[in-house]
Image (cartoon, rainbow, N blue to C red; front, side, top):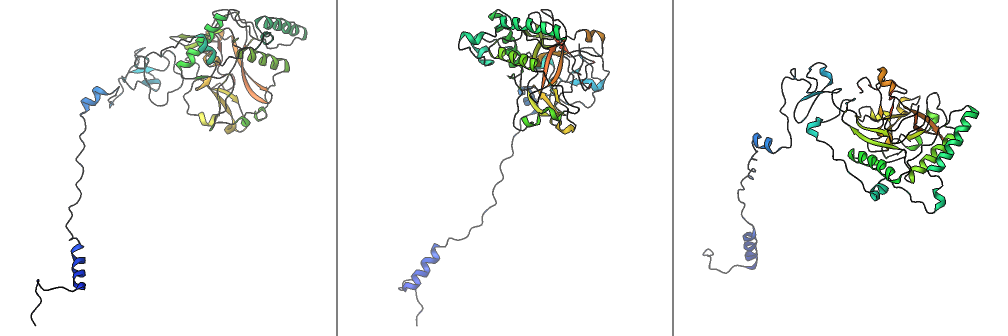
Length: 378
């Protein structure tokens, strides 16, 4: 039998097999994937030219001296600018740096001056959320009524020989009050802060239930009924835009500070210290220089502080004295007192003597702990 040739007819089964074989693609040897081309980095000189600032680390800092006093002593107090790499003593800076900053730090020349915003009347009203009176009756607690209340409370003080808090008397001129509130709004805006005349309890911080006077180690003095009425009266005046006669000014040595815009009598309520309430254990490494003790609990982990770094009022800008010098102690004209108000811990600032118009307000930061480093204060 002759072998089958290509021209011979194929059976259906054979055609199907050949068709299936043709559809199977031959396996080809695949080359490995090519690696991406190497990245081209810019030369360091070009990066240095376009960078906002950069510091070349030195191997030896023993020759660093303070740009203000020219001394290289007290190396533990020397701050190095992260832009120009120059040194500054913490107490030689104006305003003085009392606590070692956390993170990067720029000297006054490299940081530039903050632009102070000016506020119109409408913006001031919106900034402080001032409530407009609906009728004339709501305006009864104005400056004239404050004077009547003040004289009446003064006579009671003499009769009962008991020193009571006096409400502040706002300036009579509405334009002057707007100027005072505008100075506070400018200072708060420069520090990227919001105005708050109350203690605030934010998520992740201490809850409101943690701020109870019963947790105070040794107890806390209770604000009397008459003084509580004075406090609420002052708070109501602030909500109407009748603020205490105070102005926030900027000083090259002290930074933002507060001046009396009218005469203030002894024992006058000035302001309540406000801000975010947090556990002191969360703020042990915080560089905020205005924290205030709120609650000293028997268990230190439950102690609370007021942190006016994001929210606060004019109390944030009242400076402390240098309680290591006689001249510093003479400047003190108000004090910070902790009270239990409706079982809640509150901090009030009260005048300790008559304060003249134009006089700056000072109090002792070390009212309880004697741990704040005030020996370098101006």
